[in-house]
Amino acid sequence: MIGEPSLKALPVSADPPEHDKYRVLLNPWFSPKMVNQLEANIYAIVNQLIDGFADKGECDVAYGFGRIYPVKVFMSLMGFPDEKFEDFLSWGYAMLHEMTNLERMRWGAKSALAYLRGFVEEIRKNPGNNLASHIVHGKVEGRPLTDDEIIGMMFFIWIGGLDTVAATNTLMFRQLALNPALQEKLRQDPALLPEAVEEFLRMNPTVNTARVAKVDHELHGVKIKKGDRVMCLIAAGNYDPAEFRDPLHFHADRAENRHLTFIAGPHRCLGSHLARRELKIALGEFLRRIPSFRMKPGADRTVVPGLIAMQRLPLVWGTKG
Image (cartoon, rainbow, N blue to C red):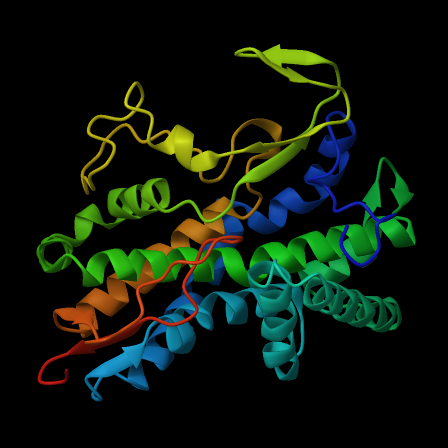
């Protein structure tokens, strides 16, 4: 793990059956039932943000919308104090979007880990009804978690809840801004929103996943040695013509959409149900309340690698621009 190499991000860094015992502890907090309980709060946060720019004819949908609402939902779920919002975003941005600057990445990771350690100690003294307290006071196989297990799990969830939905949200609205006909189609038929979200997820995977080879192997003539790190390119699978009809084009009504954006198998994304609901609500409410929008003239359309995203995405509607 960046910042403290001896720590393991759990459960993602563990293989079954070790992986399963940590997953069982966390699963109830990311189940469809829990997401249903969070829905009212998601709607409230999304609409409060839209209230701030609906009448202005413009917004930076990346900076003033997409980076905010999923983080606020996540902080509420975990029990983090609201005043840490900007710090969290700064630390997360350094880790996930400044990947050519190792010192900045280390600063982000070390800052986050130092805060989490102090937060864990506070929760030990003052338990609460939130996910962080559930982890700190949780048990696996009948025993309390060790300090390293707690921090490894807290850090994994912290980084996962901080940026992935925000990045996907930005790429989703970028695609919509370039396609007014798609905007109108979804406005006229909101029943398409769940399938549309899946298609946005398929076409805009924000992360790839790394794995460590456990045995020597050869794949298409390439020799892979035990211990080698292998980067799995999610986008390659999501655009496979053998799996997806017309994969280079968006189909809002694509019925069979077995994309790999949330990975698959035992390491399937823990927060996939929450991510889908956040994206669906944000998309539906934005289209309901904001008329046909487009990129602001002269806007930078660059998408950066690492955790694939855009830092800024200024949109305009009505007479603006």
